[in-house]
Image 1 (cartoon, rainbow, N blue to C red):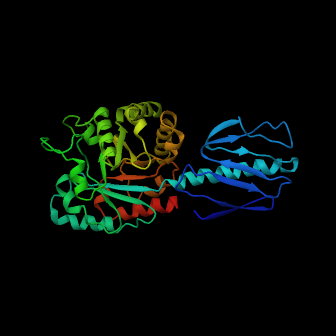
Image 2: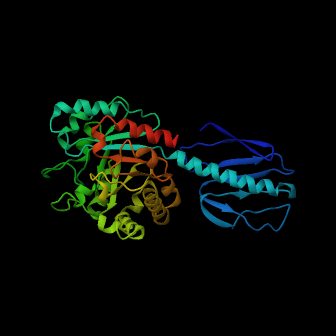
Image 3: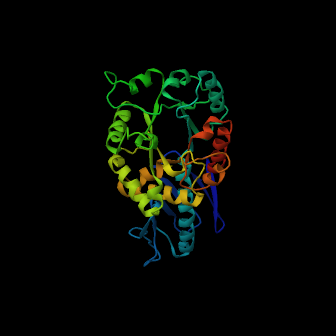
Amino acid sequence: RGRTRINIFGTVLRLSCCSMALNLKVLFVLASCNRAVAFLVPAGEAVANNRISHLDSVSLRGAQRNQGTSFVGVSASSGCLRGIAAFAVAAAMLASHTARQARKPVVGGNWKCNPDSMSKLDGLVANINACDTSQCDVYFCPSPLHVAYCADKTTNGAKCTPQNCNFTGCGAYTGEMSVEQMKDLGISQVLIGHSERRGEFGIFPMDDNNSLTTKLKYIQDAGMSCVYCIGEPLSIREKGLKDVLAEMHVQLTPIYSLLDPSSVVIAYEPVWAIGTGVTATPEDAQATHKGIRDLIAEHASAEVAEGIRIQYGGSANAANAPDLSAQPDIDGFLVGGASLKPEFKEIVAAISKAKA
């Protein structure tokens, strides 16, 4: 955002970055060297050279690769080598920070099958409108009966986001909602795959990985965005992180090719924490989010992994939001019970502050 000044060995560098464009290539010039040293820095991978065979021509290609940003050296003189190393570290830190900045926080409120009276909707919408959305995207998910009433009630850009859709459009589909109907109401986003529709509702699974893949394609083809829920039950969590991530891979496998940071937000739900008041520790939540991002990097692309936003959806509230927000791979929250309370705005404020 704007311009950043970095001082390396007495040389002040002025760097300009566009935090919203992960593909942007930034040219760095170190003017204090006997010969100019230029680095081309595309997002996606970092290159660190640990072997320099010539003093007058240093190639930083073919070195050890790490996830982050890549550096390609043009030329340097012997007096520049120490500066190059320090500069590479500084630039890597800047690029990593820039990538995180590009993921604008996002907080959603899932009202589920609430409230019991339309007379209470204005108060709930007021909680949404009380949120400062200048640094955080906000959405809320009314029950199907209340979507039409709430669709145009926000004043701060928060998105009314239905809790489900079909994948067939309008027609003889009793009990279903189509994206065409949503778009007619001015709605541009829908949530799918919540655990309570995957089988945790207590009756039968209303969706599975295959049906959700079809729905995601349908949503994207309609030009809408999607909040796509994934998560694991307690029986898997008790086996450890390796098994949790194996289950996340199963749920993500059909949609890796569909993951587009501009149209998909992933909401990770530890099912065992939903509605129980129990939440993962910030460290456990971060480890899972990092693991999910690594899976996406491996099976989709590093660019998609760096750009896609992953929400935490396990009993987030105003009390635990600051600590969870401090974790680098947690980009927001899907809030249940607390979204029905005035404290919802505090959750938005917490992550806005942490990611600023």
